[in-house]
Length: 392
Image 1: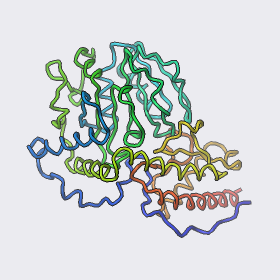
Image 2: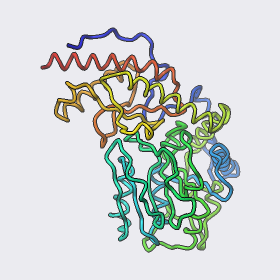
Image 3: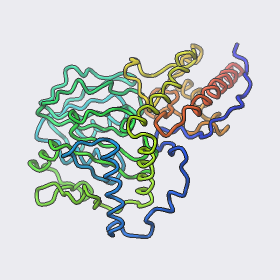
Image 4: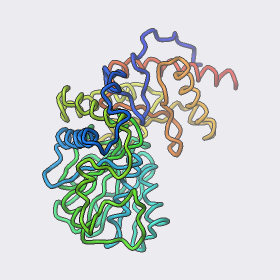
């Protein structure tokens, strides 16, 4: 029989472990807002300069190659990826790879909204990758780099040929700044500010390779494009958008916050340091999972374990024997206990994923906070297990 354990005394300094929007960078304060160009037009000289600063820092920190273009677009990563699909897909067959919730959303768009007649779906269940070995790159290929809702990442980009006829469209929102991206294998990369760098919501980033720009300028899709998706002018890429003249009105407060996060990234050592921070953070949780019998990693293959969104299921035999709805209720009890204690907010698994826990370990999280959290996770489990035994 499980007995109650003493409540831990060490608490995470920052209890924010949400997988999006994510924790702010260490040392962040509202002083950032004081620098924002508030009450001013984003089309002013100063406004354009701040937007251009955000784009230039993005290119610098990420090491975006010459010839690639970067734009700030509306509606977070979703808007950026939709914009890319609606502008670029159609002249070739499309293969969509999906192994988590957002990848499956793109499948819906391809089949039900764009209604492409030559679209192939290659899916895998939560916790696994689909077969990558037989993907045909004569076709356009759509995929996520890191499954935020499944905890499964691409181990590398070796499965993509450097020379290919089709385009690769990469939803990298929970991977970028934490995992390497092989720019020779990526034609479109999208992400949002509120993931690895802990920026504020509603803005997306669109990165286009020269091959993607060539497709954009040589192809006009047969469907109408909403104004927010239009990035061509007189048949050519509208370069002004990629220099900071955004399609719609951005929040200059959010822009300043993103600039602050990028500058912090530079101060801590740039991209290698961000990768190392995420790796070290993830190791804290994976080491705990490996030595803790009541919890299990949702990811089947250790080589594909995410270093940002750690997805877990309850492995305790008594809990696994419960009906699915009761397993979900048990996991929710753990989540609610830790939230009420103020030691971990928003760590429930995604609504479409198997019941369990999901904890963010991106670069803005501190390893010491994750180490402190593990004791609280064990405590909350024993509390929930005792409650389960009492109710039996």
